[in-house]
Amino acid sequence: MDRWMPAWEIAERVRRGEWKAREVTERALARIAELNPPLNAFIQVDAEGALRQAEAIDARVAAGEDPGPLAGVPIGVKDLEPAKGLVMTYGSRAFEGQVAEADSVQVARLRAAGAVIVGKTNTPEFGYKGFTENRLWGPTRNPWNPAKTPGGSSGGSSAAVAAGMVPLATAGDGGGSIRIPAAMTGCYGIKPTAHRIPRAGEHAPTWGYFSTLGPMARTVRDAARYLDAAAGPHPDDPEVLDGPTGFEAAVLGPAPRLRRVAWSADLGYAAVDPDVARVARAAAERLAAAVGAELEEAQPGFGDTMEAWMTIAAAGDTRLVDEMPAEQRAKLEPGFVRFAEVGRRFTAVDVARALEQRHQVNRQMTRFFARYDLLLTPTTAATAFAAEGPPPSVIGGKEVGPAGFIPFTYPFNFLGLPAASLPAGLAPDGLPVGLQAVAPRFADAFLLRVSAAYEAASPWRYPGQD
Image (cartoon, rainbow, N blue to C red):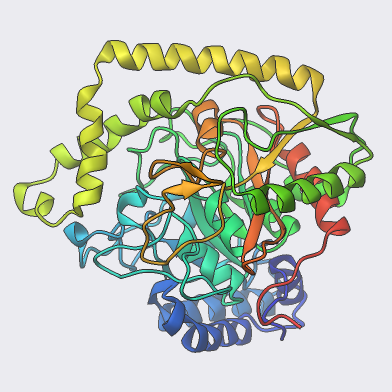
């Protein structure tokens, strides 16, 4: 049983009775035991619980039932999301020892689709930074080079998937937290249109205004099948979309034929490592060729949205800190406290201005997508840096701030547009580079179809894969 087997194929074999879910789970647990210690992708593994889930799936198959489209697929759950009976620490010493009493809606839907929850994956404290390291669990390391970070905040999930421990893991993206780690480990990560998957359930995080749930995967089809299982309305989420799914069916259809695809190496304002820009540009050309389109250099025309993004986003972390008892606040990382304190400098009028700017920039993107079918950029401005941080302070010969390595991701959280990171290739340092593809609002199925066309034309391998 190949550790690189896609999730959809595992599920189909289990559903047909060709494979036992217990055997699949045992092999995944063995891989985690072997591969996790140097990487620290999983912070908790629930072997007994996973085997019980697998045995229940096998019993359903034996009884002639269909256990679901993710039957027997081992999945990791990011430690910003509750899974019943497993730790729920948000990567923070302030919640050390907390155990979830119930699943989030997303985890419950994945279980109902037949997925086997094998454990929790690491994340920075409350997901506040773009690399995965915290005082409770320590740093997670990149399978391509364990001295480097797998990115964040879904870095535990990306390391687990890229190393071949599990084929799928949950992730979330408030400023790039799916796409950044996908780029730095060579995974496929898609942030669907905002509110595609409900953020609901006991202890499920709701403080991140721009946070969007989605999958960390190795194949586009796996990501599409995950979205089919997890997406859809729920009454506890007041903003969730009530829209169609059918994402896997879209991926299995013919490749789209596009007219014009836009490429921007810097969005008009970003500092970018030249090697990253070169590798991503070559991947953009392959993608355009795969969909029969002309690749054109073009800028969306908006400036850096970081200040406006922060104006709206920071208040959620400020509230989170303010509601903690003093003894909990004393356990927080100073970096997270500083991040949360940013929210105090903004007034309600500042938030209203930022929301208006969001509307104006969104209108610009609507006009942009009237001319172009798709926007392509690098996913990150640099490759993976040291696992313990800090992020680079100089990129492409220019001084940058702590978020200078992620100038391409947060604008599309600010706007809520669907965006994916595709493996672009390796930089001269031997580390993966990501190609970001951004599509119009609600065009998740279209983005997946484009991603599948690129995947077929530009196959990818992982470290240790023959």
